[in-house]
Image 1 (cartoon, rainbow, N blue to C red):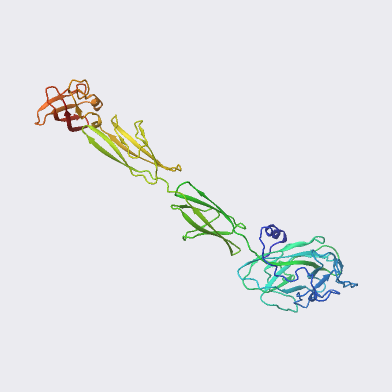
Image 2 (cartoon, rainbow, N blue to C red):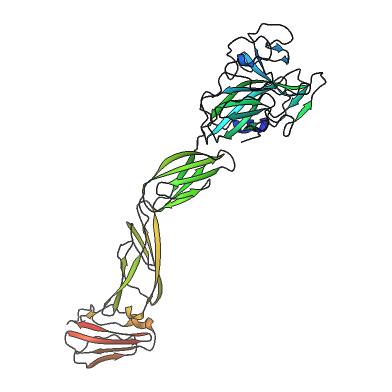
Length: 470
């Protein structure tokens, strides 16, 4: 990421997880080969060096020399300032009007940067007190090898560059940003890489004979960014199929989130969901891509629950004489409890119920199948119950004991008119005939035996046998 103002950098810097080692040696200018005695001695802050013909300065509290060009702290040629940390700091001209001199400092990193990885780069700067101009474009340039240029370093665009003009002469201001490496960079050079060309800007703060935009630098840092990808999930449902809701967290708006399941399914977005038909252990990996760099986390999701019930049944009729029982064949799966509603205010909890309807008409049969966890499924079927289900008896005992003496037809009244009832003996002789349901047959003057009946009514005809037992 290039050209990040200091104040914007501070907003996102706090959210970055930095666990890697600082690759900048002697980052706060504590070490030296020889105590600096005057300006223009940056090479004494080993292993820092000067890559151009300009004159960068190394100031240190251990310097005891006096005079105009002293390298002492806090008071020196460019102003009055204590180090942010430690005892030393760097001084660079970002711009000079009198000498046209822009200064740079260069250092070898302690290890090459890894290609295609994200790095955090920062330093703290403070405008020198006697610098009458404030400027921006405090840049960080990374290269694979050291270089020298005895003039201005032009046409070398820094990977990280500060665009905000720094005016503070009291407090240290943090600058920097992040970028993704494309090569194994080994060298860092800092300074103004734009000369007086855009986006470089300078403003005059006060009058001074030698116009400069001069800055103190301290506490350099170059660290590999290790961002911690994270996500949450919840499993919805008591029985299968279950739904897994995923919640991923991006580092910044616009990050790409990709979910890869162990069975090959790939999803995207911050809040995907997926349904599972079977129990098992499923692995999902979230990859958050920020600045083209992927950061991943993987979790196992265990789904352990029974299959949900599936309600289903068939309707079967079993005809015995003139009574027609309706048998219900339960075809449900994964269920242990059943609730039947036959549509005539009659209920049942049997698994395979048998039911006889007392009225003619259309009925909706509903089945609810459930398990011990409370998971349930329901289904229904519509049936038509005809008048043929009206007669109850298929045998009579007209023996004078007052019980079951005759065959009643009153239940056929609901069948409506016209109605015709005939009873024959085994030789086909008509023994009884009636056109009303109010007259029963008492089997008078007939011996014990099996007799044949025919009932004709408005919407059908039934035939069967009646046993007479005397």
